[in-house]
Structures are given as C-alpha cells and as structure tokens.
Length: 463
Image (cartoon, rainbow, N blue to C red; front, top):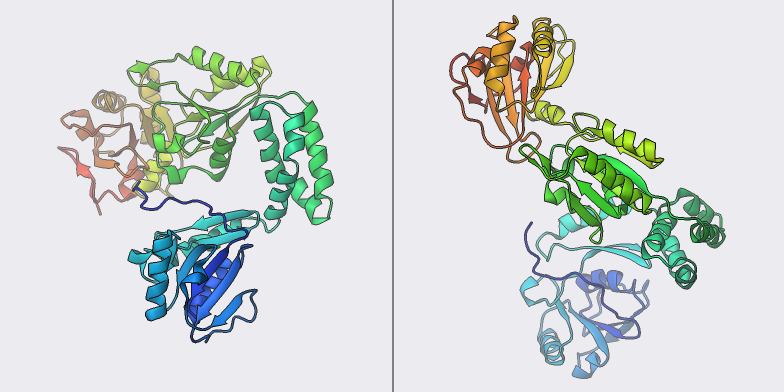
C-alpha cells in the first residue's frame, strides 16, 4: 500500500463562511458540493455567468476585497485574473485552507466525491490525480448504502445518552449500535415512521439481556484479500477477537476492526505454537466471556481446516457458532491455471486429499481413482511429492499422467509447474517457497500451463 500525501478528515464549517472566487461553471460545481453544509456560501466575481438561482448563496458581482475572507473557513478560487491572485495571497496570509480549481499544486486541500447520507458522509479522494475514478467509486458506494441510513444514524445520535446510562460495557454498547445500524427491522420501522420506537425497543433488549458470545469459523481463502467473501468482511468488522492461523496474511487480518484483539495461533508446518486442543479451549473461553470471535482459517474451514474438532468443542460447551465458507486452495489453483478439474468425457469427478500421513491403502485408492479418470488435488505434499508420485505409479497409475503444481495459489506471487507423474517421481526439481496444490489426472492437460516451469523428463503437451 502506498502512503497518503493528504490526511482525510471532516472539517467544521458550521457558522462560518465558504468563499468562492469565480462566477462560471467551475464555481457552480463547487457550489453544488459546499451548499450541502450549513456554512454561508459567498460567491464573488466581476462576471456572474453561471445560474446559481437554485442554491442558497450570497452573490456579489464585483471585485474581490481582502475583507471578504473575514470569518471564512475555506476559500475556493475558480477563475483566473487579478482578483484570483489577490484571493490566493490573502488566504495564505490568513492561514485559510485554499483550493485552486484544477491546479493541484496550489491546493491546500482537495474536494472529494461525497456520498451524502447526512449525518453520515463518505468522502472519496484521489488527491487530485484521478477524479473520474473517485466518481466511479462513489457510484458503487451510493448503490450499497440505503437512502434511509442517514435517518438511522440520527437515531443512534439521539440515543447516545440513554445508551450510556443503560449499557455500561463498551463492547456491549458497540454491539447495540451495530445491531441498530444493520437491522432490516429498524430500517423497515423507520420507513413507516416508527424508527424511534423500534430503536428504543432494541435498546431495552440490549440493556437487559446478558452478553452472549459467538464463534464464526471464517474461510480466509487462499490469501488474496479480494477473494474474501462479503460475509467474511462484515463479520471481521464485528468481531471483538480475531483468532487466526499463521498462513492467513496480515492484510486479511487487518480487515478486522482496528481495536479488535488479534491472536496468532501459529499452526504452520514445523511450527505449532498452539496445539489444536489449546485452540479449542481458547475460542470456548473467549466466547464464554461474551466476545464475538472470528476464527480465521486459510482456505475453507471445512477443507483440511480441522473445523470439525473446533465445532465439537463449541457444541460441548453450548457456544453458538456459524461457518463462513472460503475459497479452498485447490479451487484457486484451478482458477489460476484454467484447469477444468471435471471435464466431459475425461474426468467425471474431483478428489481433494492431503498427501502427508497418507498410508499405502490411501495411495492405492488414489491410483485407482486416477486410472478411472478422476482428477486428484493433493494438499501438503510438496516436500514428499517425489515419494507420493513414485508410490502412485507402483500402485498402477500411469507415469505419463499429466501433473500440474501451483505454489501460493490465488496470490500475486504464485508459481506453476507442469509435467508428468513419472517426471515428478524423479524428484530432480526445486519448487518455490509456499504451500502447493498438486493436480494429477488427464483433465490437467486441458488447463493453461503455458507459463509453467517444466518438470525435467517427461512433459505433457502445453497448448
């Protein structure tokens, strides 16, 4: 992430003046923005050319005087000439923030694209570099936010003192406010003019009911933050504690609330700072304290995530839980390489298995499945890939079966390798660092492996 050259903030203008020097279309564009505030908007120009009739502004068709900046909070210069230059000099002399339209180098601040749900506002700025992009982002946010959200924000403000008197725990207050602003029932009541009544009822319930903890088993996907589901993002923002595995990238963990506690349970190959039993005990203890716990797992919780053991511990303790699916590494690897793991006339099925700990019976079964045309997706097998390939061949899998390997699937730093089962069994290749998915099967050849490194020895044809 790049560093900001500007610091986003909300600037008080109530009871002050916003002065715009200019009388043309550029000045009118700024008027459309600043008249959304409660400030007195003053237009000064020797030539008023734009139609300001639809806005509550003070029009002055005359020269600019330094006294025009008395009690001014902000100054916009939207024309050129002697008056414009004098206004710039006077604003800088007085330390009043200045915006010179279309001249970023002379601006103390930039005007963002604004989503208005007063008292809620969302401002989008590109520091003057790409205003078109800011407008496009604004359009997306406009579509996401209910038009009633401002009314609900006002309900929250009106209840602040009552909330503080009824709910003394900070985390419990936060839960009430989250319930207030996200509840479809509150929005529906507000549309019917019963918003205040519904909000009071919600407050009564939160003020008298004891806090109940919950655990959300969340799939973080293969590691790229834009592959996280919307539900996962929402729950990370609601969580009081984030308990995450070592393979979950920091950028994903940081999508949680800034004040949420973060606990790295560090389960990775060769490094187990927490045993599974300790993790089970931890999430039960946190939930019993009334906390909302995001148990963040790489990939999907139900695919090699040991979620079954955690669910059993939660059920035994009587703790509420829910599961948020994520994109498993095998699916991300298939997408990275356009590999159709099921393919009509070639592969009628897809098997996910973990190579570590597989016994001879497992390997014999996998070899049989591969011979029947099914695609194998083997997890956690990079360090023993040659041994597994050799044993599959010993159990009847053809050495010429196509093999595709994706390391760090779904991430920007992914790397891919292709060849055959026989080439993999030779064990004469060094893979890049990171978790790997090993595909074995005839359907693998239909993927896009054009940029993949070739395993030495036998290779399948790459289109």
